Length: 558
Image 1 (spheres, rainbow, N blue to C red):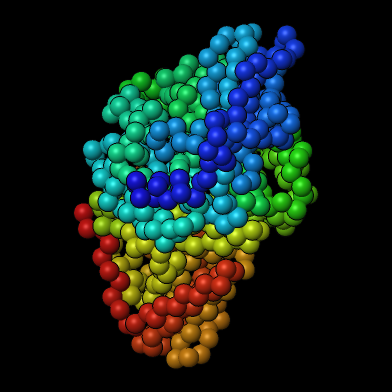
Image 2: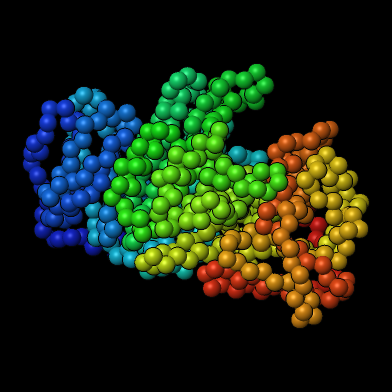
């Protein structure tokens, strides 16, 4: 960690060796409750956005800001300007925010010192749903340390010399274990430091990051997020990095209603349920935040639940509760380029809605895979869509954008998996658990059926608009079609064991059985090798030759 943090400090340059800029006294109206100065070395920084989570103001020519605030969120923070970066809090967190300490009606002062930084080119490591909980059964901390951290450090080493931030897209913890194992939201920063996490860490709030001991009432969302806000500060804020405007939002509205059939866990008082949308306070804050952002500025928006998802027919629909996405999209639709990064669904899905061609959403799989279960079961960490658990490294150079996939087990690698269906038809025909799964769940593909003979399937978990995929046999390109058939490995190591004793269809399993980045082609023979080539919009080409015939490996080992 020291090596990379030393580099980040080297990329930052103090504005001046002179004494820090100082304003001894700030004059303000009587009802102003928050004041302060934003500066770099001995220079004031004008035009910097400052917010309390409700209102947004700008610093004046002397770097001074004043806010009339009720301090409801318990902090004040800045939107860092391009070319500058906040200091560290002493761990992996950035000091772009400060907690308020005085009563709501009392005035208090919070100054922000920034450092100059070369951020024309920078990278964001995007990952989601780590679900850290110290559960001895699945050994999540062991696998995070053995698989995830080395992969993140490899990506940072490759990026050495480039300003890099990590963003967890929500569910950094697992709430049901907070009061059982003691691994709660307060534990995260110190744990990351202990493990040598190499770069600054920003965190979106997920539904599993709320305090499950919160009593359900009209203020459950605010009270439930209190512990998160004390650790990671604002749940909605922005930063200007290079030519990009970065926005982090909280689109979980926590309810934690008590239900008769809810599972009982230590310290958990309700069912931990929630709605999905950006609330009115955040929408108004976002309107103010974007008021000074030009329409040709690339926007990057990070939130936990996806804006768009797919229904049972594979069609794109709103991921927000009660179709409450429209007010949010209205604030984004006029920008030339908007990239949304989200998690929550534990699947890799890229969406460009026909009605909003300027908005591209990358919905990431869980870096925890199937909640850390599959490494113990099969020796490999995969998600519910069959894709490797991993993360994206997104690099911005000016307004140019590139993105690369990193598996937590293999490092940067071929971002697809190839199946020769002939090699697994017998497995589906003889496995009681797979046959039972297919009988219960209509969306599960029964690859034992004769119609799948000679088919080559490719699960491309880095698929997005602009990618091209070819499948060739003996040098001849085969006709490729995109389907939503289920992933065989996920079926065998995740869904079949989980549903082995079920006697009726499980709705979530049936929904997750569809894989929306699955492709297939029918080969002419059973024995000829096939070559799969994927080309991404970012100039990357991945090629893999699949030797046939080949036995399908036994993944389920326990």
